[in-house]
Amino acid sequence: MAIDHSHTAFIMIDSQAGALDGPFWGTSRSNPSYEANVIKLLKAFRSLQGEDGPRIIHGPAGPHIVHVYHRSLNSASPLHRNSPGMAFHDISHPAAHETVFPKTTSSAFQGSDLGEYLRAKKCWKIYFAGLPVDHALGTTVRHASDLDVGKHVNEKGENVPGQLMVVGDATAAWAKHGGKYDAETIHGVSLESLKGEFCTVLTTEEVLKELGIHEGEVLEM
Image (cartoon, rainbow, N blue to C red; front, side, top):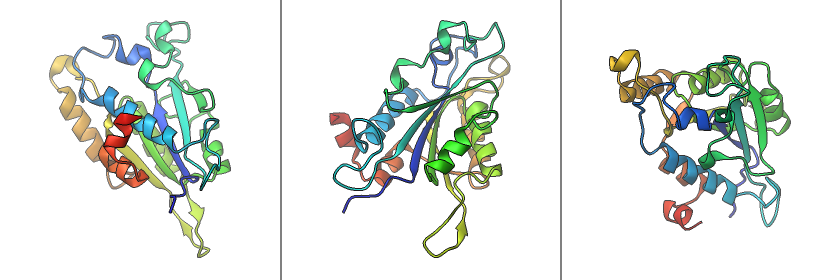
């Protein structure tokens, strides 16, 4: 029996060239598997869609894929609107039918229509990935929790909270204060600070299992 993913969204946060290809935030980054896991996740979610997006083909509709990018107001930032670094990174470039939201603040929900979009699409199972876990990604997830994003009425007529999930090995952090706080520590503490109160933290492998996809299938796509 096909799984209904029509209420599912996968949101990529700030996976941009200027963040990944330059030393602006430092040269020591956590999670060397970030790029590989993002590629796996996008392949997996896209495999559940039609060629033109989340529509019904032979079974339930597929998930919604959303990309958020930062348009910095800081002229020195590689994510500034006039910088080539503002572009999406090659590993996570949106497909033609996927939805894109710009932002100028840390949270993807501040000053954007992202929350309205998720309500209109009736998305209440929401996976987050992207950069950095201690900044834009973490801020976005906390804001989503505070806004009750995904809250809905179930088949019993009960108001239930949305399911907010961070893919912990599809995000990353950079070392702070000249390496005094190393990147892996920043990464781990940031995830632990989100876990439980604001979201569930999963691995890429666990997400693939929830989607009903084996990792070997993704590698063959």
